Image 1 (tube, rainbow, N blue to C red):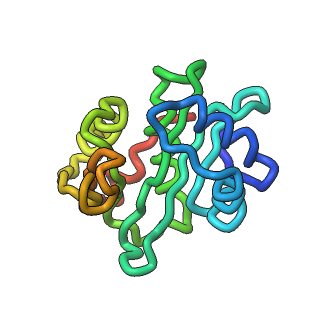
Image 2 (image 1 turned 120 degrees about the vertical axis):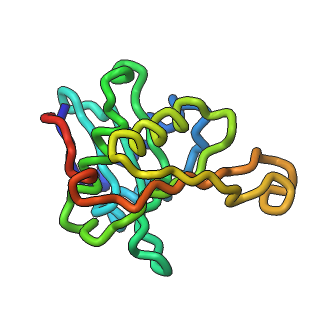
Length: 168
């Protein structure tokens, strides 16, 4: 498995991967293209034999650059069970562009067991607390059309915890 920053030509494969990973919300192809180009420093793609097997998109919120927000995590069915998602997140945090990050955040619906397991596992591995608070509520933010998105916030992250990566 190889990890790298995405490039514009990865857009279609990433769009297809996200579509194949319910319950992920699909983004427009244009959004994925912008993530692959304008946000490449905060996104990662995993490839095996040249094919996209995994994707993590994220960013550092301008109002809180000490946070790294994980937007989406997608792993192909063929690559599941190999800790690929956590390895991609750790590789992202190890990049020089993420120097100064003290907290990892994301939003997850209550019923997304795989995502909760991923982020709870990272918190355990890093020895950091995980806070769960409502961020976007079903009625107030989604007009009843989407489940509440709970913010998972891990941190503070220690340099030791952030760099306890396994060999890839």
